[in-house]
Length: 324
Image 1: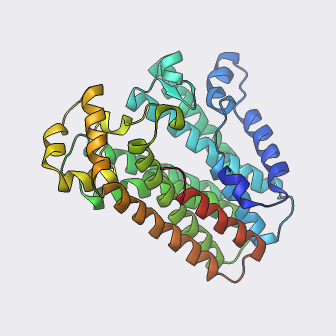
Image 2 (image 1 turned 180 degrees about the horizontal axis):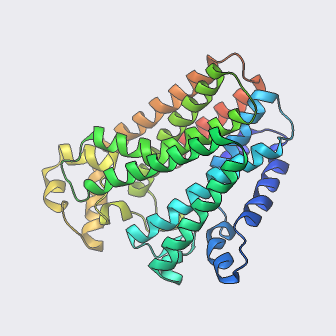
C-alpha cells in the first residue's frame, strides 16, 4: 500500500490528479529544452507526499471534500522546492539515477541540473507569492532552512565522530522543515486559527523527521531495486546517518573502515557491520518516537476534522512501518 492509499480519503485521488496536471503545467517554459529538463523528474513520478500533506491540512480545516485552487497551488509550490532540491542534491552526490531514470546531471550536465533546479525554485517562489506575502515569506524561509541543513551535512562529510545532535539538526533543516511547511501552507490558505496552524506545522515536522530517519535506515538495509537508486550511497558519499552514527559508536572495525572514500566491496562490509548490531533497531525506535509525537499532536487538536485525523494517523503508521 502506498502512503497516499493509507490515507483512505475519498477526494484525494481526484485532487491529486489536479495537483499532477498543475505541476506539469507549472514547469513549462517558452524554451522547449528548459521545459524538457525542468519536467524530467516530474515525468518520472514520485510519492507527491508533500503536496498531499497540503491537501490534508486543507481537508482537516474545512472537512473532507475537493480542496480550493489555492490549496493545490500551495502544494505545488512545496513540491517544486522539493524537486529543485533533488536536482541540486544529485549534483552534490554525483548521482547517476533518480526515481529509476537517469538524473538530470547524468543525462545533461551539472550546469544544466543546477540551473534547472534554480528554475524550479523560482517557479515555486512565484506560485507562493500568488498566495500572498505570508506564504511567500514562509517558502523563502523554508528554502533557507533546506540550505542550512544541507550545509551542516556537508560540514560533516566523512566525519566518523558526527554526533546525533548534528545529524538531527541537519535533517530538521533539509527534510522536516519542508514537511512542516507543506502542512502549514494548507492551513494558511484555509484560514485556520493560530493554535491549529502550529499543530499542523508540528505534525508535519515530526512526520518529516520520521520519514527521513526511515529513509536513512533503508539506505543501509534495502536493495538498489527497492530504493530506485544505489543503496548505501550515503555511506559512499561520506554522509553518516543515524544508524551509521550509532554503529560507529559501538564498532571499532567500522571506525577503521569509514572516515574516507570507500569502494563497493568495502561498502558491502560497512553495511553488514551497521546491520549486525542494534544500530538499525535504535534508529527505528527514534523514527517511531517522532511518529508517536505526530499522532499525539493530531489527537490533541480538537479543531481538526476527525476523518482526516484518522487518515493522517494511518499515513504515519504506513511511513514508519515501511519495509526495512
